[in-house]
Amino acid sequence: MDRGELVEYVRAQADGVISTLGPDGSPQAAYLPITATDRGELVLDARTSSRKVANVRRDPRVAVVVGGRDGTTLQCEGTADLPDGADRDACARAYLDAFPQFEASLADPDVVLVRVRLTWARHGDYRPGVSSSQDVDLRVGIRRVRADDWRSARALRLDALRDEAAGLAFLETYEHAAAEPDVFYQGRTARAADGDEAAQFVAVDGSDWVGSVTVIAQRAGTLDYHGRPIEQSRATVVGVFVRGEQRGSGLIDRLLETCAQWAGDLGFELLTLGVHRDNVRAQGAYRRAGFAPSGVTFESTIGTEIEMVRHLRPGVQRDTSDNSPPGVG
Image 1 (tube, helix red, strand yellow):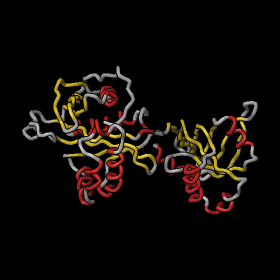
Image 2 (cartoon, helix red, strand yellow):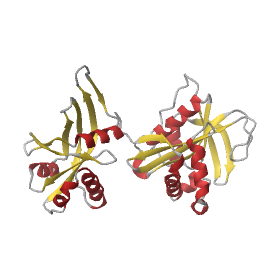
Image 3 (spheres, one colour):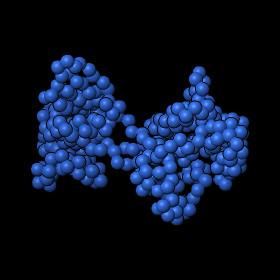
Image 4 (cartoon, one colour):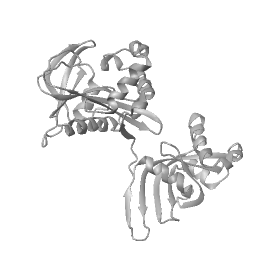
């Protein structure tokens, strides 16, 4: 089960038991309606005078069990809070989508929403003839773009070009990208959605795009996007971007691993990229993902770049000595 499947499960079950910690550390449980946001946060409502609200304010650690009636369960652990502002609005939308009959209740000032951000979950299936359990993958999902994603692809590209490190990371300016017509993004996204010449992979947190990377096939005898002759066929990574709140989460490693899988499946032995010589943060992230300088440097529109290569042949060891946080590349 992944996070998307967890969301579907919680919404289908629609109730469960939450256990909070009382003043003396003992568990205190309550059965109540529960739903989930697109990001996999659990949402429930409670009276401000309830034990669980007082407990959460003192100690946010909680456990939740959803399901049971049909022989399946979802056991969860996480931290709870009482969201406000935009976070509360998002939780309220999810809650009212699930329980529209409680709209008046949410307007009561003595009622608050409780949000549980999960740190661990396990799905169990103990129906007749079945006995299995598996931990839930709570990480942000990664998938290849679809042709109709072009609006989201455009928005994320423009956000990337506004990043503080964009001048060291991208060959394109925000002004140039913003001026491109819709048909440009429609075509580029469609090409990256299908086929063996290019693929764009995106990290989607609920409905929010939080990261992206594109990998392109470069054939021997052609020119790369800098106009340099390509002597050996390879796949090349471009357009690496992860939003600030996701940096340090390992997401960039997973995006690059997805590129390596795509390139390897097509038979490429080399995965390459170019990184500005002054972009030390990105270089550290690439080393952690198995890339190493090839010894080649070249000049591009943003200055001197270092070529880095990851060998995709079996048995090549990855360099895991650098723990620099991931960022824009």
